[in-house]
Length: 327
Image (cartoon, rainbow, N blue to C red):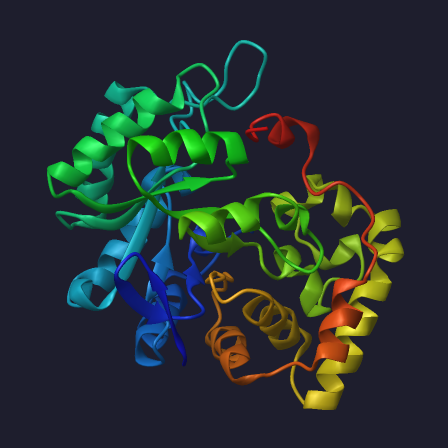
């Protein structure tokens, strides 16, 4: 696999989002997840992404088992700021609680390091921006972790351009993780040009549209009852039907290249911008191999334009999640 850069480190240009191995998509098999992680290292997919919020720390504990004899071979990213304690995770209005306070940051890194069974993480993201804490205070606290050797690089997730600039003035922001794919392209207006200007690597999450761009989700019945996508506007029956043209275009191009739609969707991202590393998630080895094969696919200008011109219907987040996004 081709390599790309975050900070001063080079890694496979397609990373691995590990959230779904324990969180949001229903039950999974731990042994199969560990086999996926082992295979990922074997094929050069060594940028792994987790968060303390995913399954209240259980996602980090899973990765610790795979990191035991492989820590030096993995570029490890985790996140802080989404409060995961079941009692404290919502405020009086029922909204998910955010915490970017220095005290919470300091305590959270210790918990993450303990769960991951490591003494440092390569990349530490602020998972969501806390509107009640000035970003400068949060970044100062995170920068202290860099000085202490517990964190190598700092990142933000779903942050506005204004916040990115303020944060970067306190300590270099190495990576920005935000949703970006064929079916969500808001970052192209302001965020991507800013990342390019400040040498911040973009890390697109949900690069396959939470699975929709793979063509495997045709109707709501394709999702299990426990699947959190049932709450997303774009996974309602009427919106799935409206957006079917997206998959049709991707599938047509995939057939021409004798590959799967997911490969085309990821190749579109890799071609769009050299300053990004997408992190598609999976808990199946076949899908891992399929996703990483996008590193070999080259799309023509005509194909890129066809994909870029697709119209998308529906909001990307339910309202309660949208309220946590920094504007």
